[in-house]
Every structure is written in structure tokens, then in C-alpha cells.
Amino acid sequence: MLPPKTSGLFDRLAEYFSDHPRILLSLQLAPAIIFVAGVVFIPLASVFAWSFWEMEGRRLVPTFSTDAYARFLGAGGGTFRLEVFATSLRIAVTQTAIALVLGFAIAYFVGVKMRGSKYVLPLLLLFAVPFLTSYLMRTLSWHAVLQRFGLINTVLLGLGVIEEPMTWLLFSEFAVHVGLLSTYLPFMIFPVWLAMSRIDRTVLSASADLGGTPKDTLFRIVIPLTLPGILIGCIFVFVGVLGDSVVPALLGGPGGSSTLLANLMDRAVSGDDLPLAGAMASITLAMAIGLILAWEFFFGLKKIGEI
Amino acid sequence: MNSPETPQTVHRHPVELFFERHGMKVWKGFVGFFILYVLLPPLLLVTISFDPSGVVRMPTGFSLQWYEVMINDQALQGAIFKSIILAFLTTFLATFLALMAALGFRKTKYKTLVIAVMILPIFLPGIIQGFSLSIVLSQFFGVERNFWTELAGHVMWALPFAFLVVLTSMSAVSREWVLAALDLGANPWRAFKDIEYPIIKPGITSAAIFSFVLSFNEFSRTFYLYGTGETLPIYVWNRIFVATSPQTFAISALTVILSLTLVGLATWYLTRVGRVAKETLEKGLAEQQDMPGGSRSGEPPAVAD
Image (cartoon, rainbow over all chains, first blue to last red):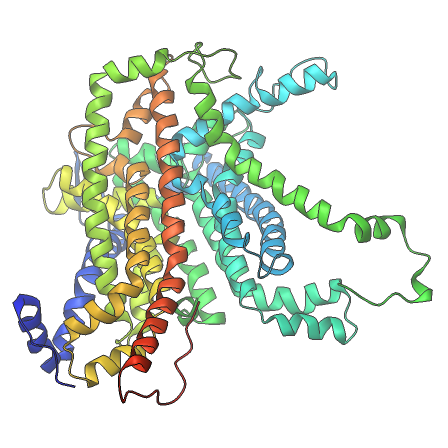
């Protein structure tokens, strides 16, 4: 068969590109790569540099000063930043654990128990909904559930379970966890489910046929094979919580849960204390990059492409 | 799961028996609770927006007054307009960049590098991405925040997701089909237009819808990158700590409804990728058989669903 007649700009361009496939390839990849490098990676890399610089008025001046890190650790004015950091780490670790247990169970139900059902995609999508609605308002609307005359108190008072409204529900570390979980649970469910859905059904039935109890199958087959997804989910949640300033600001309260690391960064940026913001961002980024490198070391980044 | 009953296992713990009998119900209840848990806040917003009190609490009445205030709020109109413009530009740019990158991804040797560059931003906190770009631009290039920095923030947020969606839909296209088209004399443009594009079109559409929704609701990057004029999430943020501006609930409720509709639409498109691939293949085979003298050589390639 003869090739169809070529006409038009695209066809003429394509003729050229079929002789020069390497140029076409670079033109396809370059725009996205250059864009992401320019707006994400170069600015993030620069953070490590200017966390060692100093402010002169409102301008960053190149130098080498560890002053910002010293102040973060408590030099000249109390260790409150370090305490905030410790609280943030504690909340991030707790939230990761909560999201892991619940997210794993939900992913197990969707990925193993409901394997092959036509409801899998709609079900997963229901969990993706919050991710695609306004993050601010979604967080704020927890007030209606948790506050003094909110949903929970109203229901429990009406049922006579409690006599006084519970006031610790809102503006507390509890509220922060409730709010964080509704944001980050999907981030755990999706990678775990992806990893789980790739476990061959025959592997699961083989385990049962060979006398494995459901518990054996879970701990010796499902969890080991799902580990890459589990770790990705944990990185998502942990790093996400450390970079979240909205939930603590709207739901947090006494005991340090209203000001977390991200709020300190935000304050440092708006107060033009850029090296301090840079130092805190560098520490957060270093942890994120460390976790991602650990994942890469154990499983290999190429795996994402296979998904 | 369906282990054979043996006489030895008759005396079992009541909890175990309970789960044997009602296990699936417990599972459904558990998962159902968490679906409610993640859906409750957005849905409550819709009910709050109809409450005459105008504060975040359990709704007690019905009124459209905040929708009326919303319609007459000049600043809000500006914010809606700006958010829509940004969302459209982001949709176009992110989908285009994602499609090009995904087309290149199939051919490049440096797959790990491309994946890393495209996906890593999802793992790094948005506020750090936002203020680092803002600071680099203002401190090193003297560029103050403006519409374009804002657009960059939106595209950087939507791009990884658009890329993943397009890449997923491309897995339905067998590389051999494209190579066959090229062998038969099609140039790369024809191979894309006639072979790949029809199959991945639903994927591109849903990537575009996701980009739109992500951009429309973007907050943490925009907060550090916006120039003059608020976007919708910024408008909401700037009034969230002010006692009374209940029109934000009205617009948020509308946003929730719009987002949900679009997400439903995007999913519908996404589920079509596999079907379109199958239909295209079947149609091609049928035509081949109808052609005089045309015969099928070998088995058709398997279609990834």
C-alpha cells in the first residue's frame, strides 16, 4: 500500500522528523523537563544555598553563615522552633501510622476482597473526591462536625450519651489528626491499592491451597509484595503533613498543634527572614529526599513507570 | 479464605465465628464509614451554604441569601473570573506538556530520569515549592509576583497528575501498532494522529479535566506566587478568619459541586481508554477480513484493558 498523500504543515514537519527522530524526541521531552527543572528543582536546590546566606535589609546576600540553623536550634531566644519541629515530627509520624493502618485495610478490601468487581473504580474515586475539592473549605467544614454545637456533640447530646458538649473535639491535636486524615488517607490508599492490585490472584489462591490461613497470606504474601506501595504512601503522608500549614491553622489549638513546621516557615517568609525559612525548608526537603532515596535504593524508581 | 471445614475447628472463639459469619458486613461497614468520612466535609459545605445563620455549624434552616450576596460580590466575581482563566490556561499547558512528555517517554533511554523529574514534585511540600520559586524570582531576577508566576505555580501542580493519566492511557497502545504504521510508510505525525490519538483521546480529555480541577482549587503554591487579584481559594483564605463572609460558603459549595461533576466526567472518559482501544482493533480486523484478498496473518495483539 502506498503511503497516504502528505499535505499540511504537520505532515511536512513529520517528514523532517522521521529522518531526525532524535530531534523529535528532544522536542517532546524538553519542554516539560525544562519547565519542571526551572520552576521546581532549581528553586528547591537554591533553598539549600540561601539557607546559609544573610539578609541585608530585604535582600539575600551571599555569604556562609550557619546563623539560620543556629537560630532554628535555639540560639539567642529559646528552643521553641525546635519544640515545634519535635511536635510536627510527632504529629507526622502519628498521622502516618493512622493513615497506614486504615489506608492499608481499605486498600486490602478494594484490591483483594473486591478484586475484579465493577465497583472498584467508583469506590476508589469516592476516596479521591476530597483531593479534588477546595482544600481550605474542606478543612474549615470540619468545624461544623467538631465544634461545641457541631454534628458529633449534637448527636451525642440528643442520644443522651453525654450531658455536656465535648469541647476538646475542635482546636486540638485530635482535630488536627481528624482533618489531616481526611486529606491524606487517599494518598495512602492509592499507592497501596496499586501495589496490591498487581499481586497475581493465583499467588493468593496458591497460598490458601497450600494451607496458609488468611493471616499467613496477609503477612507473608500481601504485605511483602505491597511494601513498595506502603512506603510510597508513608512518604506521601509524612512529607505532606510536614508541609501542611492550613490544617493546624484552622483546626489546631493549645498544646502546640496550631503551629507546626509549615506555619513557622510561612511566618519566616512573610517576615522576610528568608535564611530561616530556607533552613527549615532544607531540613524538610532533606528528610523527603532521604526517604525517596531510601525507596529508590530498595525498590528502584523505574517501578513507578510500570504502574 | 474458604478453608475446608474440619471437625477439629468446631470449638472456636466466638469472635472468630462472628467474623466468619459477618466478615463481609464488617468490611463494608468499615469502608463505608471512611467513604462517609472523606465525603462528609465537602457535603457539609453544601448544606452550610443554604443555612441562614452564615456560620460554620450544623445547619438549621434553608435560605438562598448567601447565593444572592455571592452574586453581588465584586471581589468574588473577580476571583472567580481569574480562577477560570488560570484553570483554562493550566489545562491547556499542563495537558500539552504532559502529552509531549508521555510520547517522548516511550522512546527515551532515560526513563528513570524522566519519571523522576515528572513525578518527584508530588512528593515535595507545595508551600516550599511555592515560596522557593517566589523568592528565587524576586531575589535573583528582580521579578515580582505576577499573573505568570501564578500560572507557573498552577502548571507545576497539575503537570505530574496530567502526565500520570496520559501515561496510563498510553499503556493501552501497543508499541508494535505504531511501529507497524511507521513501517507502512506513515510519518510520525500520521502514526500519532491515526493510531495513538484515537485510543488515548479519552485519557487526554480526563488529564485535561483533572488539570482544570486541580488548578481551580490550588492554594498552597498560589499563596506565595499570586500577583494582583485573588484567585478563588485565595479569596476564601483572606476571609476565612474574618467573622462574617458567608458568601464564601456559597461559592465553595458551588465549587464542590462543579468539581464532583467534572471528576465524574473525567472518570467516565478514563474508563473509555481500554474500550476504545479494543473497538479500534476489532474494527481494523473486521475491515481487514472484508477486504478482498486480505487475510489475517497471525493472532491479533493482546489489548491491555
